[in-house]
Length: 98
Image (cartoon, rainbow, N blue to C red; front, side):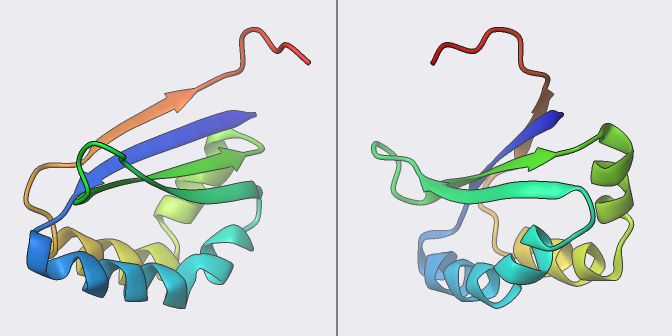
């Protein structure tokens, strides 16, 4: 499993535009083959920064999404709203405590 975290910082006057875009496409993103979890996180100290937190069954399925029609619509529209370059990381689980 791959855990993907993408931190995005938006122009203050574009936050609502991003939230509307995310709400429009969140189900399509979550229902991509291989996506098993999707969250939108808001930074408590930087209110114009949000992160997506998603789980993917494999890196191949994540990359398939990144080449999908949905991504082709969502990402260019999202990038237009940024005030800073996004930061993305992919992780594998290492230790799990229950």
